[in-house]
Length: 241
Image 1 (cartoon, rainbow, N blue to C red):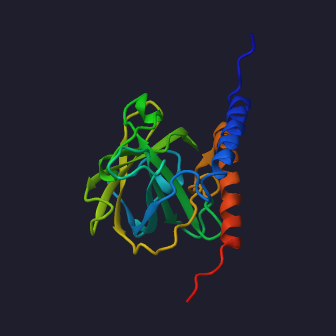
Image 2 (image 1 turned 90 degrees about the vertical axis):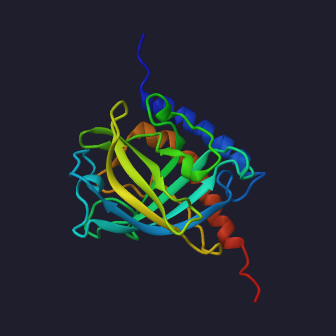
Image 3 (image 1 turned 135 degrees about the vertical axis):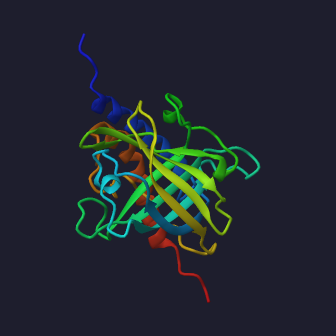
């Protein structure tokens, strides 16, 4: 019996997810998941010894040792705050203009969801009530020069509504120990701050790549939601004065 290759299987699952998200858009536009979020801004600062993950953004920090970041924390289903939900934390970092990767505007995205930390729960979505109590992971690994790499984020102190919310970023192989490499310090932005679309599949970290099976799994549903968002933005009239 021939073994199944991950990319074709992922493509089938990805097409199914695209159909599901397309159906969800019929009743919830333009964001079928993570409909409400809070924007934050701050810095990423590298700490400790140099890591050898095979991803340049982690292994080769900027000369200053830090870079600006904007973030969005949100609830996936959009349940009331008193109830547990799958939480999302998206980071958009400014990258070196000479670095390979990211988008044309010089940014790259990392998208976390509330997960477990140890194997196998680091690959499972877990509902949490409060953002500062969640352990965040990316679920699907990046492809580094040394193999697959997972990222995680965990609160050190504060919360999204405090003057400072500090988190530690860590990297690991799918079965390996988490190795901290940076601290994120965020502060809330005004409620009327525009909330951009994050997409780690098209704004990839410098030195990282997407496995073909990861792209086949995630990108079809992302693309259909991104197109809907663009249409909604183009057809929404400007606010009256």
